[in-house]
Image 1 (spheres, rainbow, N blue to C red):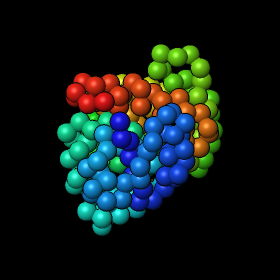
Image 2 (image 1 turned 135 degrees about the vertical axis):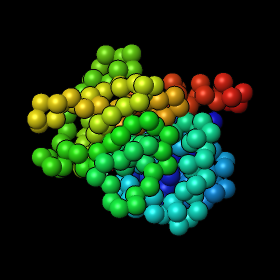
Image 3 (image 1 turned 90 degrees about the vertical axis):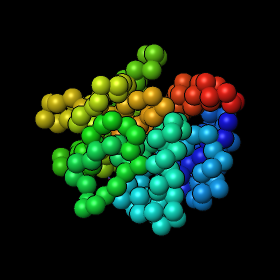
Length: 205
Ligand code: GLN
């Protein structure tokens, strides 16, 4: 299985390291040939507006959008979550996303109270251990479509619960950055529970 990390901006290296720790040999994706060669894509944390603009510049925007719409497994952390969302609140004017996940995210949602914070949260992947989650100018999910599974939530300072990890079909997104903590369970979940089964179903390994 060939896994790519979108390498236009953001914490690409950290995702590459996490994927290597999960036993895959990832490639950096900057060109259409690289996109065409992969079976699954990771979209890093960084700045969603910049990543989208660079994707347009490198003529990757529409091709990525299409691959995702056609069922390519993808995982996005933080800015990557925003880029996978069908709808964004507090976007900059004209901000576009690859879409695919039937969610509405609010950019920089926690930022009105706290810019960055860390928290131990439950990740409902069938395991029982907590995940140490790092949030940096993170989005949260405000609305989900009926086929979206919520895998983790946090309580915001005003006492409301917000999804911060969601899955719909082959798409996984987290508001937080597992690539920064050396805990590879989220990447492993993406590889073993989403990407590999999708490839097997598609008749490839
Ligand atoms: N606030 C950033 C954005 O809108 C995301 C921050 C991050 O990826 N750490 O893209």
